Image (cartoon, rainbow, N blue to C red; front, side, top):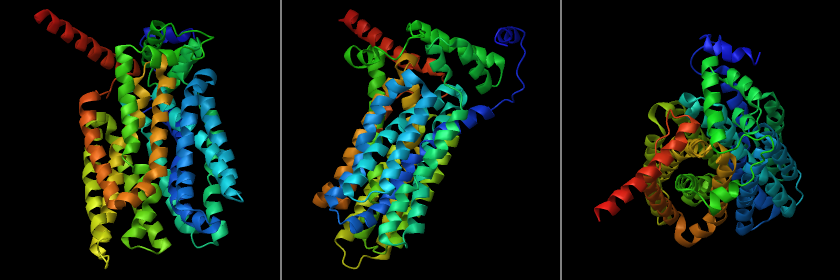
Length: 497
């Protein structure tokens, strides 16, 4: 069969697969992205569960911040380790490892008899989340064709948002149960999708790019035929991948990702340096936007605004989750049509305006004794707009962009490094949001987040090239060409002097 493939391609014989989005590719992307639902569910369910945990276990606000933020901080451990792990054991088994680790954490949290046990469960789950956030978009990017990569690689964010919405609905549904039971069920139910993900990914093929890096070219060819619309397309993609791997001397059955950290951090070339700035920058601002913290502490924000009933607070969360889910779907569907840059810049600009409006509304309510309904509605609309613009831009595009700009040899560990920054900033924001807000008020905090998004918009405009419709091998050339043009420009300036 392997010997027949080149001959079929040479004769112009195509496979029976219809043009457009390959169904097998879509299935693999959906299975890989389902792993991301674990983080989304945790974010959504913890925003409500923490209210009951605080009352049931009698913990302080500082302990609440540690509990919420610990998952994000520890997930950077998983993100850093995931690059080397996926280079060693493969992308597919790394997804299984991520689900299994989160499963252990969910069980620990569900049966935790005290705060230390609950925190231990968060630590274990955090490591699993770190693995998941790196490997899901990376695997999807490596099996996707260039014309559909934006849509398919944004699916992890779709599942994160879906998980958040499911978490909100679970909060609302279980909030009437006894206080010592409801939060345990909320957290423990995360084990269900973890088990499903662990078994589901066993039906997925390995990444063809990883197979090429391991010298298993025939296996890579068979996978590419399945995920391509024709044999010609599969052969063309295989040629590009093999050429890219050969140019970096990475086709080696004994290759385990060795030397990558040195190439990334100790002696990066100008193109690699530009890629690192772009990848780390977009991941930094994704979390510096405060989106995770706003979702975690939204009930606290609206308690301060005047909504005291817990079911009403959870109802606001459901509304916010629906808005977030709707817009991330819109972004995913149009990402390959409009490109990464336009949607990213629209999203950060919208977040800057929404956060400013939310800051104004919060400031008004802080100085109002009557808490007028119209001001509360303005704040609710502003929060929904903020998370919606995040779902249009930074939410899906961060995963897409990070997973597609690194060259093949550096992709797994470079992506892991960038996402570890994402997780670190998320943890810092989650663990300091309430403390800082107590010092400068919620209104002041939202003004800070608005200013952060203004800075992000300017930097993204100047630093991030468009990658739409480029193969992963062609994306590298965008940064390489920019670097060469800058060198040529400096040489011309020197000659003129």
